[in-house]
Length: 304
Image (cartoon, rainbow, N blue to C red; front, side):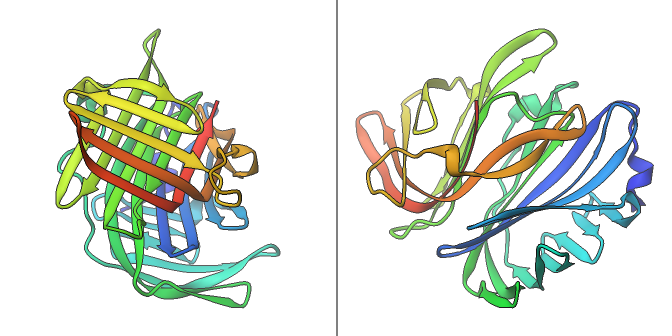
C-alpha cells in the first residue's frame, strides 16, 4: 500500500472510481479520484453527485491512500471499498457523514473492454466492478438523514490520461417491474492516429448477460442524447430517453449537473451528468422481444 506521492507518473495520468448509491428517487454518487498532469503536478478530488446538486472537493495528495489489490481508497476522513463507504465531510457548502454497507457484488465474467483493455496507450480504460449490489445504512446530508436500507448500488472505474472528446454513458439498475442492470457507453476513440466509434454495453437480466461491444462486432445504428440503437448478430437493443418532468418529451441534457473530467491528467474538462431520467429499454433476439422495461431512474452523461 502506497501514498499518491509514489504514483507520480512522468506522463499524465488519472484514475477514478464511481460509487453510485440509490434507494428509489434518492441517489448519491461519489467519485474519489487522483490525477497527475503533464507537468507532474498531482491532485486529489472527491466529487459528489446528488439529485439536486453536485460538488467537487479538493484534497492534498498526502491525504490520499490506495490499495488496488483489495480496492481500498481513503481520501481524508472518507474511505471507499467493495464492502462499503464511510463519509465524513464538513465544508462551507456541504456537510455529509455516515456509513453505507454493500452486499455481494455482481461483477462481469470478463473485462467490459475485452482485448482493448490490454492495448497500450489507450486514452481511457473502463472497468465495471459491480453491475448491482444491495446497500444498507444511512447518510446525513446538511442535517437531513437519507436512509439507504434495501437500496442498490453500482461501481465502475476509469483510468488513463483523458476522457473521450465525445461520448454517451447510460446506467440503470432500478426497474419497477423486474430486476435488471444496464450499462452503455459509446465514445469517439483515438488510437495511434486513427479514430473510431467504440461501444461497450452490458445487460444483466434473468441470470443472463447480454453484451454488445466493438470487439464483438456491434453496429451502432443510432446514438443521440435521446435514442440509442445497437445491432449485433441476432440481437437488437433499443434505448429511448425522456424527460421525467414532462412525460413523453425528449430529454434535454442542458439541465445536467457539471463535473470535472481529465484532459492529459489535468481536471480541466467539464462534463454533465443527470440522474432520474426516464428510459425505455427493448432487447430483441431476431423477431422475439425478450426484454421491455421502463425506468425513471436512469443515470446519463452526454458530451458532444
